[in-house]
Image 1 (cartoon, rainbow, N blue to C red):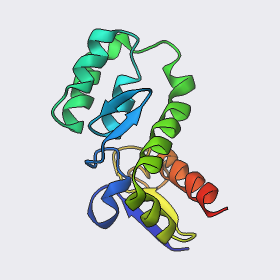
Image 2 (spheres, rainbow, N blue to C red; image 1 turned 90 degrees about the vertical axis):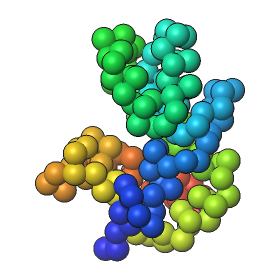
Image 3 (cartoon, helix red, strand yellow; image 1 turned 45 degrees about the vertical axis):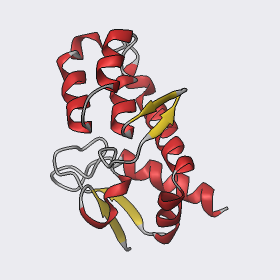
Length: 143
C-alpha cells in the first residue's frame, strides 16, 4: 500500500506545526498545535500564554511547563479534541482539502520516530492517531 508520510517535507501541511492558522472555538490560533496545547487547560492564563506563543514549538514548551495543571480527563478527550481542531483546519484551508484528496487511498502516517501515539513511533508500530484522523476526514470528503 502506498504511504503518505508527513512530519517534514512535501506533506508537511498535515503537521500541527505547519504554519496554517486555524479558528477553533471562536479563537484564532497561529497553528493547530497552539490550539491543541491550549485545549489541555482550564486556566485562562495558561491558554493565553499558549495562544500567544511565537511558534508551535514554543506553544508545546509552555504546555509542558504546566504539565501538572492539565485537565484531569485530558487522556479521555484528547482524540476528540484533536479531530475537532484538524477538522477546523481542513474546512478553513482549501489547499489542504485539495492536497488531502490527492492522497487517494494511501495510508497517511505521521513520520515521527519519537511519537508512538500520534505517529509511527521508533519501530513503526505506533498508533498513528493523527494519520488516522486525516484518513477519516479524507473518507468523509470523498463521499
